[in-house]
Length: 81
Image (cartoon, rainbow, N blue to C red; front, side, top):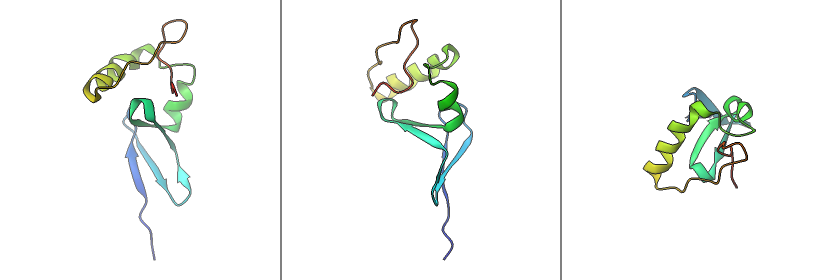
């Protein structure tokens, strides 16, 4: 039996990700109700880069989610939970 892999689209870079058969190259962030690829997650581990903030803020508003408390320096946390 051949299993099909399931995929996802990264919220930040819009690249294709994969999760199946022991492979998951992404990270679901509950507080933002979204999934990002491993590269975007690692690249923003100290907080979301400012050029991503407008997209994140629009998503939070559309989803009715609260804006997480910002980190020192004003950056949105990668994963506030």
